[in-house]
Image 1 (tube, one colour):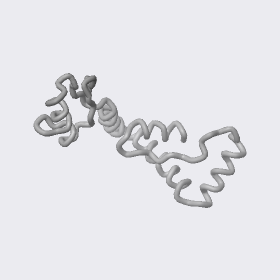
Image 2 (cartoon, one colour):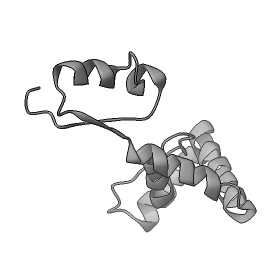
Image 3 (cartoon, helix red, strand yellow):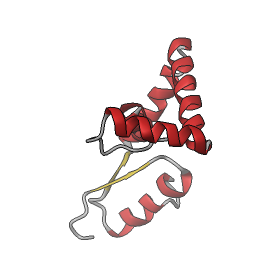
Image 4 (cartoon, helix red, strand yellow):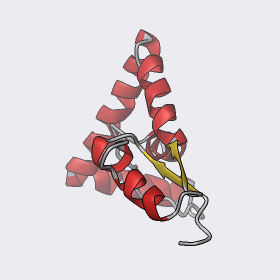
Length: 114
């Protein structure tokens, strides 16, 4: 910890609080460990602004419904697996990923797989 020069948390009071948050407690013993608000969380805030655009919101809604169809229905999933095997036998991706509501990077990965 003597070499710690930075901390990054998503802004919840228990982590980032300036009175008794984790970052404050760490800085009491290690003053060089500066706190920086997590950049990924800022991307999530940007995503919520993007989600206010109807075309994007509708597109992600359709993607989510398609993913849920294949993940929740065994017959649809079986057909999906067979189609992947037939048309993309070298693909390492065998399943669609759910769209995460809170993490931008996981949502991004889901769209790439889709």
